Amino acid sequence: MFNLNKKTALVTGGASGIGAAIAETFAQAGSLVWVADRDETNGRAVAAKIGGRFISLDVSSEAACAEAAKTIGALDVLANIAGIGHVGALPNTTAADLDRLFAVNVRGVFNTCKAFVPGMLERKAGSVINMASIAGVVAVRERLAYTTTKFAVVGLTKALALDHSHTGVRFNSICPGRVETPFVLARLKEYPDPEAAYRDMSSTQLNARMIRPEEVAAAALYLAADESSMVTGSALMIDGGWSAGK
Image 1: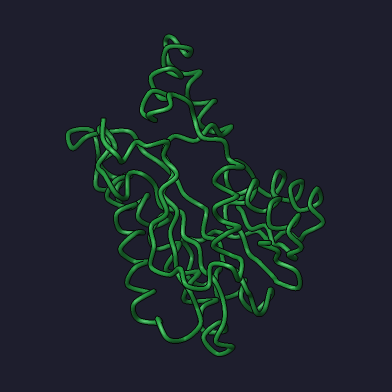
Image 2 (image 1 turned 180 degrees about the vertical axis):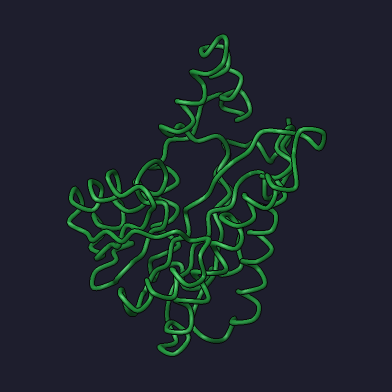
């Protein structure tokens, strides 16, 4: 069940964290995986580990995404995982901060879809998985710019699903809560009390633990596989109950 044999997938942001876990899971399921990232060192390492291919890609560039589509060719699965964050409410969020997050988190998804989805529509098959967040469903304190962009990702995904509902191409988003990635662990070390900060972040999930990247990757595998053929336009929550209420 949930095999990706003979399928080709592109995972943006595949050099580390959730993206790397998804790339590895897809490869284990039989897919040829293209790992895309601006981090060439770690991106190439992930690709080598899983027997995939690496492509350097800045998703915020429409031209770069178009060139990537020429290099890679037809896709069966497009996993838009690349994203960046920002901490701040309105007083300490600048227009430049919002623009920077929008360029990667929203325009990045739009750019890759513009580049790769036409081929899927032509073949009447494909699965697009966009990484949103719990912050795309409920607002998160001190994350104004991030929350804004992740709500946009959820909306963009639903609009794509609606517009192409009869084509055989599916569009879904994943909305994780707090995930224990190398990036998150590195940021925690910047706090005066990293252990207390870790406990605080974990407590937002009702079961009081962080989500593992491979748990998010398992959901991505389901959405990529043919068994989820009736799932489109969804925002799949992997949040340890966060969205159920505190």
